[in-house]
Length: 448
Image 1: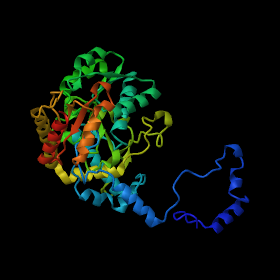
Image 2: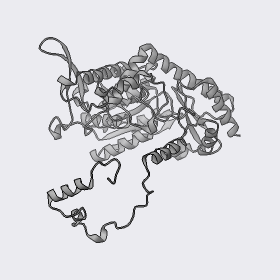
Image 3: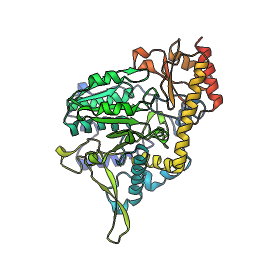
Image 4: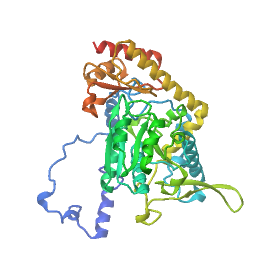
């Protein structure tokens, strides 16, 4: 046997070739001109034994600086939060982690109920009427919201605040290109959307206004002031929101949002090198039949017993392709379950307390930076992130912080030239006062 994990013997191979009437494996490639076939050896290491390979991989993994060994102040869309231990216990049950899609309700009641509970909790957090069973991540959820708005209003212009996560803005532009929709970015003023600039961009062609709450810089957008501007000319108001923040902030649904989308990563989903995540999508009742993906509904069987079924599925696998409202053909059921378990374990008071700790600790860190003489350019209220302007490249500062056991903030110069030497610092409930004080001291010393 040539390959440890490919259990096919030479005899198996010969029998298969004989069955299809081919003398050798090379004969299978005869239609490809020999001149373009690769004839050399691959530039890769020689195969090792299993024990040698495991040893090498373990040594490589040990070089990583992770959240167990370092205090992380890196956010920008992916956050280090408390995960109740019960989350891994539940999602590791084989009936959940081997499940794909609950097409057959008669054998999928547990999965369907878990999704139903996820939808219910998302509605409670966002203040919206209906939520779907999850989407891939926050970026695609927001892009789907933009496309829904364009389809509903039959307009071809989307206004997106530059305070929306730049990766999400890129996803929106990718979606919009195929739909021939114009995307206009609204500038930022003092860390939030420039309302005067937004007013100037509003016209009869605008399908929707998209903002983030809290936004990419950690600032809390004034949704109450944005809402009447967004609804000018029958356009729609779309909000991307961190669901944990909604444990303390007024939900977008109470402030006039038509669609609320976002990422459930803060609840029970590890940072895991940036994914996979779990997007959520919530709307008002009037948009119920335009929701992408799928919904789980509660019903009763012929004996009056409560049950759950997939309903109002608006994707091309279930209805005529030209009637489909989305090309996302799946969801993140396992991560949605993780989020549901985390929210359930925390409870209403736990989610609220966790959100408040994020606010308090981030503001403690922000005020400490100001006292240390660091330049904090934005004065708006924050949730768990804020921006600090440094006197040297963020890359250099983060390298110094790493040596002190700290994973530094996000280099905003990577996404905007005007934000060169600006660091986005995330402070979650897991950061201690001692860790924050060390960060501020190192930032102050490194900024001299």
